[in-house]
Amino acid sequence: MLLSCIFIFFIGSLTASLAQTATQIIAFRALTGVGGGGLMTLAQTIVSDVVTLRERLVSSLSLKSNDFFANKYARQGESIRAYWYGPFVHVPA
Image 1 (cartoon, rainbow, N blue to C red):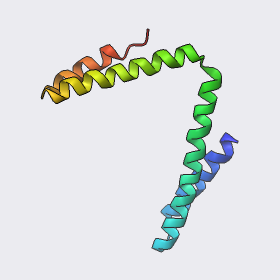
Image 2 (cartoon, rainbow, N blue to C red):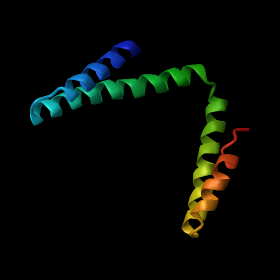
Image 3 (cartoon, rainbow, N blue to C red):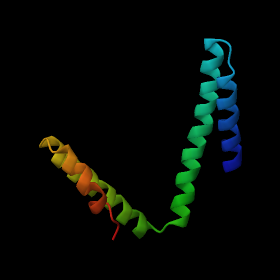
């Protein structure tokens, strides 16, 4: 299933790059979107099967804490500090 989505995405991208009219580009980009949507959905499904719920929760919390601190410093006009502290906050427990 994953390989078929990769194939659909590849064919859509290839045909969109070779399109001659705007209508063809729109149609082939839609095909690329179908393949890309399938890839994202299947990738998340595979990760949810492989990674335990506890590990996903810890990773999710570390991502959200990184966003919180980056927003806090960016709103204070200290965007450099947000980028500096971001990697240190994003370490999973």
